[in-house]
Amino acid sequence: MEIVLDVLLFVAAVLLIMGLRQLSNPDTASKGNSLAAFALFLGIVVSLVYPLETASNNYLYISVGIAVGAAIGLLSAKKVAMTAMPEMVSLFNGFGGLSAGLISLVWLINNKAAGQATEMGIVLLNLFLGLVAFIGSLVAYGKLSGKLKDGHLRIPFSTLVNLVLLLAAIAAIVVFSYNGMLTHVQLTVFAVVALLYGITFVAPIGGADMPVVISLLNSLTGITAAISGILTDNKLMLLGGVLVGSSGIILTLLMCKAMNRPLLSVIFGSFSSSKGEGLEVNGNIKEISCADLAIQLAYSDRVCIIPGYGMAVAQAQKVVKEVEVILEERGVEFKYAIHPVAGRMPGHMNVLLAEADVSYDKLLDLDDANSYLETTDVAIVVGANDVVNPSALEDPNSKIYGMPILDLAKTKNVVVLKRSMNPGYAGIQNPLFFKDNNKMLFGDAKKTLQLILSELKAA
Amino acid sequence: MNEILNFLSDNLDVIYILTFAIFLGFEVISKIPTVLHTPLMSGSNAISGVVLIGAILLIRVTEPNNYLALAIATLGIVLGTINLVGGFAVTRRMLEMFKNKKTK
View 1 (cartoon, chains in turn red, purple):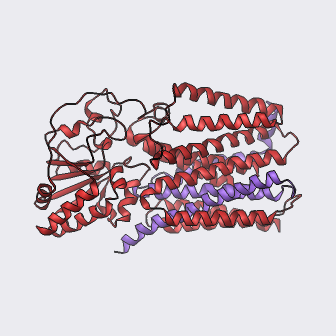
View 2 (view 1 turned 120 degrees about the vertical axis):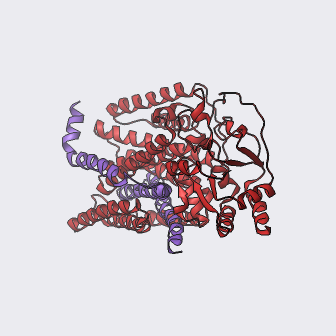
View 3 (view 1 turned 180 degrees about the vertical axis):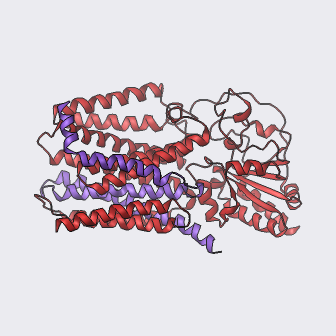
């Protein structure tokens, strides 16, 4: 019996790897997702019937827990708007982290006799990482959903506080590992330190760094899952967790590379919570009307849309698609320039545009987009800001200096759709708005585009 | 120090798996196109719902009258399941959108 279950668990592990592999290819991604889900399902079934010593099973609690969790998970996955996807993923991730933390707690309650020092260390490390992933994801959720502004959670000397909390946690893990059991007070203090660290870790990070944090937290939950796997001696958990952990790290590094910033500077840099200084930019901005822009678009050869988080906020992706259709009927070439860190999570813009049925051969990545933009007649910036900020190329004092951007210097006409002259999420003034080839069109991006659309239809 | 050495020799197979899995993770995911960043992230996020297995294994060996442990473990199961089921469902929804366009 046992050997059959062991083999099944091994099969599940292989399926999981295959699923993840397929998930990284556009043609097979959907199959890969189902395969990975099936692999975990298999693993869960095995864990339910696997013979354990002194098992009281408690199946009632398990089935209630799974039923409630599945219902909540399915419902929220079904109801969430595509624009709210980053928040949702953060929230799910936080739940996973807390679940791992709770596993440590249950282990501590169940194993009253002091365990080996190393085992104890693993339990505490898992508790710490799980709680950090949980509260960190919650803070990220708050930021992404706009419930928590970057300025709200300003922590004085955050880097120092961070470091002190982290060192305290490490010291506690080491000391408690050798002491064996913890008292309730010690455990509570330890948990509070972990939670505080989670908050001070994520709170100062914001703005364009958000996609980095999201994938970092994702990776962290994977690591706690792997550690929980060591704790409960389950190879599938170990493997799954490590795979998530390492793939999360890859994605994190990719995002960092897209911003030309080392990971440590993202973590300790407090990107946007500090006041933006940089160069004072002064100059005249020119405005354009919807009607003029519509005419300009209709007589262009090549048009390029540069979407950003503002497009998600204004829910403008579907109108953009309609503009694409009507202009293509007129023979205008229409593309989208996607910056790797546009939006608030990796690949955010791609998902939004996919929702609006934009075909993905129209989406240009950074290098292709930049060569395309050199010959573009009209580039429309829809709710993007920092990813088109020329300070990254021109101003060594700027906080985003060195970050690869979508370069609009050679584009014939640039039109920025923007609510107001407020600086972007990163709090940095954008000299693009004052360039000669740039015009501003103020207002809600969706409404503006709808006006342009009706002008185009009338033309 | 001895403790750690003992742990290492007791868990050598775990260490093997750990090491290989790290490399495997890097290899499997090394070159993903930007289109798939979000689905991959939410898919792997769903996979971290594998913690559910740990919660199940632990609650099965919890004494039936230890209500504190049972409550915590049940909460762990609920949260793990939300992560797992919700994660896969959301990823599926995203990938459906990509698929629809291919056939067009």
